Amino acid sequence: MDALADVLQPYKELIGSVAAIVTIGQMFSGSFLCWDIYKQGSTRGMTIIPFLGGVVMSVLNLKFGYILRDDTMILVNLFGLALNIVYVMIYFQYTSEKLKVWAQMGLAGAFSAAMIGYAQMEDPKLVETRFGSIITALMFYLIASPLFSLGDIIKYKSTEGMPFPLILSGTVVTFMWLLYGITLRNTFIVLQNVVAFVLCAIQMSLFVIYPSKPKGKEKTKSKAKKID
Image (cartoon, rainbow, N blue to C red):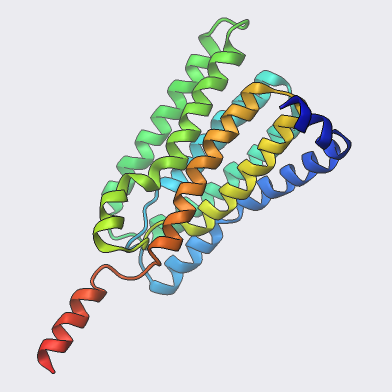
């Protein structure tokens, strides 16, 4: 890693700036999903998890920014929180399962409150490391969540419902932060983003193997042939 860090060192500021820009850009990737929801007039085939996950991650990273006294982190996550709340509101407007969504929102709120409470009570000398580890674990869970339906993806040979804009932007963001972590020679940042990048790359490969198409498409074709 040291050899690569030496090569990238002259570009450290540029890599850091690009990483910050693509991170902010990633926050707008949810707008593409909202546009799809608007066009079809419902949330069919889409889950609210990416949006609620964005809210929870913004809240926790906002708290982490206060712990680190990092103004940039605070401002970025305030913006991200506001944007993800808008996404959740749009999803709620078009979903037909409002009670289920209310329950999911309640769980997300309760979890966020519990984590903030924990950060307040934790030993100030340990909170940075421990709270940071919790955020990292949650980030891995959210990135890997589309893979939870891997069985259906393989069964129907379709990636319909997987949030392509979020996955693509996540791949770019984690790669840039991986490079930035290398320039900093920060093992924690490097390991964190290696895992995240691999998870994103696996999901991107699924879009190549199984192009998105409606699950019932094959059945419809089969019925059409029988009628003919």
